[in-house]
Length: 424
RNA sequence: GUGGGUGUAGCUCAGUUGGCAGAGCACUGGGUUGUGAUCCCAGGUGUCGCGGGUUCAAGUCCCGUCACUCACCCCA
Image 1 (cartoon, rainbow, N blue to C red):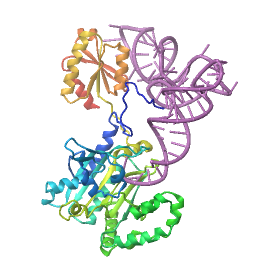
Image 2 (image 1 turned 30 degrees about the vertical axis):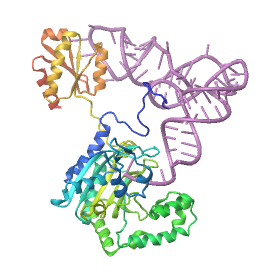
Image 3 (image 1 turned 90 degrees about the vertical axis):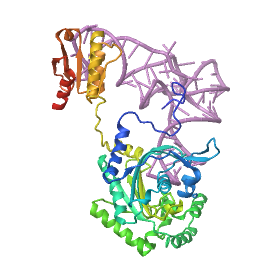
Image 4 (image 1 turned 120 degrees about the horizontal axis):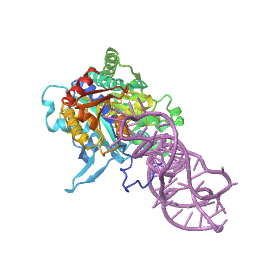
């Protein structure tokens, strides 16, 4: 398909998607807008952090930390890592700057690139784009539900329908160790290959969402975390579901769901889309009540999500949703000859100063080529100017949608175009 | 990290039992210096991914290698 050596000799690093045009930013900004509506404030964070932050925050035993990080020593000999996820950085910033000293919860949102050294695949990239929110400082199931509702609203706003929200509870520190021991005893009796046994040793929960049928069959009857919740965690879980009903957010329970990051407690969730192939998660997250303390801050709870912008975009393409492709510009200038070009350059400048998106046919193309460029620009109107019009003190305003054309006065042409656009 | 598939023009691809490297789309110009989205005409010097081998002859067969891709794993 693609040549190994591209024209010019350079290729983008492996596994990194590049987006040209408005499609990507439209998806990202739509997701961000829903977080803004719920009062989450923007936070701009470093793209790399102290490696130890992720080792401690995300968890040494996770795949993300143990084999997928872009880590290197900087020139001062400090080990730094390109951020593989957003929550650890947000929590670090909250602790470092005492953002929890004011009113709680602290509600923050972020957007940007993250990095994981994985084998690229459909929907899986080494540089991935996420939009995320974090609500820190309050342990209230209504806040869990709000976070879920914000994500759901974002996907709905994109026009997506072919996804579902799966939720479960991972319990808390009071009962998880017992459950883990019980699950380990169950797994030890199964016939599993060596890599899977190794996984069971590192994190037995992870074996539960194995996709292979031969493994799934053996998992029938495995002990589930939702049956081993503390009274408090069970009440929290039940309350979250009630609040989701109040918010009109649909969900299904998936007690086999596991998260790959160690910090999750209680509520965890994943948005799953059916049209994406193997990498079907378009967003995920949950509660992390121990993370603040783990990273040296006050023992405050938190809840948040990360949404995959790349995957949401692929989902939009799969559903053919959200394609309001606005033109690059609204007005396109077509000059015939040098004198006309000098005059049109000024008019296009005036249009831009008036807030109208406008462009011009450069390169002294023929009339036909210039009109073709006007068509491709997506403009509503073309402004055609030649010697004949200059003499008459007029300029031709052509409606590219219906082909109609009328002459308007050259003086004040920009204002007249503005009026035409207003009238629609 | 493990396994499968695929590499031919900017893009999507065809190329038969080994015999002159092609089509569509896109792009540029012209038909028409006063009109685009339609129509007609013209415009291609491609490391056939790369290296080696077999052969009179390799895009085609063999070996190696690289890249891409899908799945496992993992996750957004």
